[in-house]
Length: 304
Length: 304
Image: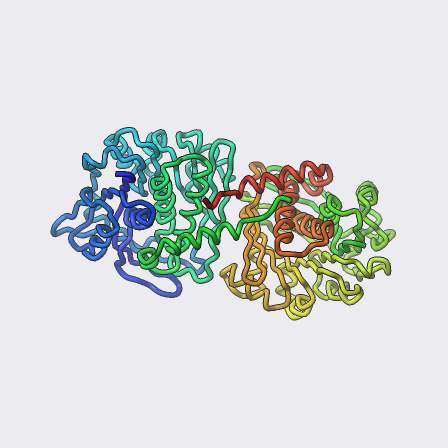
């Protein structure tokens, strides 16, 4: 496989000030896989669902050439469920409930033909499981990982151990501050770079994303969306676009990492236009290219 | 005059979590003038101070070729004073006190030789006074104005009237939302464009600035400062750099407006490195150019 994706697969119940949906397919591995599938047709997914998970979504993943030999479907069991509610500004949300179900026993077993994947994208799961994945793969070219406050608070030492084996950490601003215990975002990023990752990407929602490598900083805006329907999965969609572009081009130069950030931002900007995976299921390559060019237009200025 | 600057001149008492200063020279007109003086030597300032305002700052303005024939120094009276305290994250502040003193009688009389100024930069003052300035000048090429929550709340109708005569409105994100009564920043910007201004610039502090013209959006990041000493005046310094660059080049094309936003952002990024005007007093043209190029480096990516 070119790109190995490991993470959660869920049924999400989402409430925003404007609308709500019940048990829509979600989870980090789903968003990452769909997003990355626009860039590469060599994706292996490792995850777990119950037999209540919609067949049409599984079929769609297959159509997108996502190899599902690492997807465990547990008969008679229920898929992981999450419910959240967004506040008026769409920037903050609260978790209404979390039902781990099959996910409580998730033990990522990497199929043999996935073990030599060049690119690894670890969705937001227990850092112990992330490490377990990394212990099974053979010298990947690039390991990309996400995490969240839950793990930073409960498994900080384990996260620090995992970070030593991660090349690119993708976190949001609050998570970066929390990991580094530093309120200034740039200082926080630099501290994280000392913990293992060669690259840190800090997602700032409507304010875009910042890529930090050594002394270089690349700042990407968010695409201006006038009617955000649902921010769920935007971060994972970003990670999928980022990882997908790198896997497609097999180039991890700073120059190409910058482009990958823009591809991630471009595809994530579609994600928020509808609930769940609704919008990112329906994209064309030209849609993504057009939005990529819109980022260029939006950030260009001449020096002389 | 090439650039007419009208606004407050103050003695600011500033407390941050790390340090504090007492009665340091400030005010929108002072920040704008110093900032713009790096770009053009044809600036006319209209403002008011008491005779307690430091002579060395007045002398410095003269050395910077800022024409002070519109500066009223009221004998035996005290300069406008403001005191504010920043919270831990440096993004929010509270006003401790405001002593208007001479500023309560500020009646901007534009000297005859300022009346044909091509560029007008109206600092954050009562919109009635801003309008009074505009009623005295002769067909300027570009009117740039700032405002704040105080006027939006207390003189909204007067502000709407002034906006009809403003070409470029520079506000922060909260002010944009408040004027437009719209939480989405992009929608808010578009609403403001219908109120009169041809261009709106929304400053987002550590998240940079957005320029909106018709259907075009230009997004500029903030320069990453690891140790922000004092955010006071950064917005005015931005406006001064923006206005100064336009006055210098006498080009209000979109292409040049984008550059002006970067010059504004570049010089504002110096402002926060020290208290009050301390840092922006000491810049060289090369300092500004170097930071301008850093913005280019920070935002560049290749399409192919």
